[in-house]
Length: 259
Image (cartoon, rainbow, N blue to C red):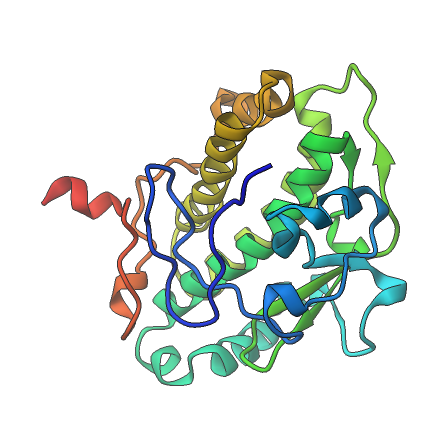
């Protein structure tokens, strides 16, 4: 399986191919991707010898994690999120909190979505991604470095439908976080769902390019296109990151289409 894009320690990722790559660096408390410990979730171990290893290394079992991990449900609290934002970009947080919040969420989604979808699509495993089942280790910049799960989840049956596949991720993780972050940041939920959609589109494009069987990635495509579950994750909303000093505009920014 090919890489889902380069990981850099400094600066935004560059768009150097026809496949859109996430314009967010992946930094963590445990060093560069090659230095990170192997994920403790058995279902993800087959990916350790692929370029995808750096992404799945962000998800492990709680028994293997740091004592400093916080419950993911803490991220519903404004005081906790303000603490993270001030650690992430303190100067920009005072000047433009909406842009900082959105940019921080891109880092969050980049760390969360690839391992979750790899387990789901490649191995038929639904990980326990409900907020109550997840703890998060943050680095010194207030960014999520590791997601620690209480257990390995469960196998999806062959007849598992799209809603069942993604229910824990969508309804019990993304939905409550995005609703809370929208209220705190004072922006539409559509902005955060657009950030989610950017990574879902990117993962789908990579799967379609590098995986021969359409059966593997078809559930993700159906989820993105389902009218009953369209959260505004098509790129119609600018993420505001261009307001931050030293941060490049997304190559696929919706504003560029109107220039």
